[in-house]
Image 1 (cartoon, rainbow, N blue to C red):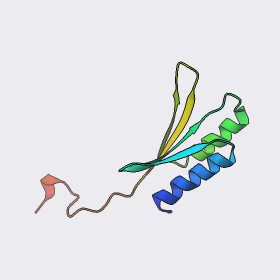
Image 2 (spheres, rainbow, N blue to C red):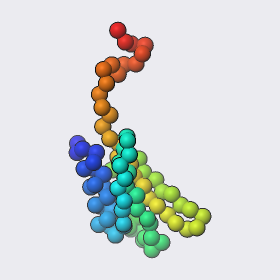
Image 3 (cartoon, rainbow, N blue to C red):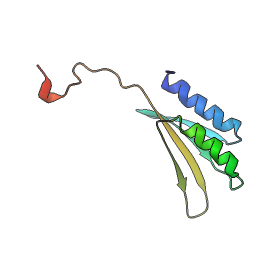
Length: 92
């Protein structure tokens, strides 16, 4: 499985190839990709965009009352290992 940063960049590149302008934002636990959705996006393009977004850990669409639409996708970063991940009830 590719590193989360590589996955996020690959998603952004695929969305860009579909004609969307993307932004990649780094967060503590995930990397997000955002893209403005033009009103002229055809049904076929929506299917292709959804195929790309399905590769993310989470995705969604923000729509404003002014007509703006922004797609977002998030790729989780690897969680650093800790000493005991079994929880406080199982510690020795």
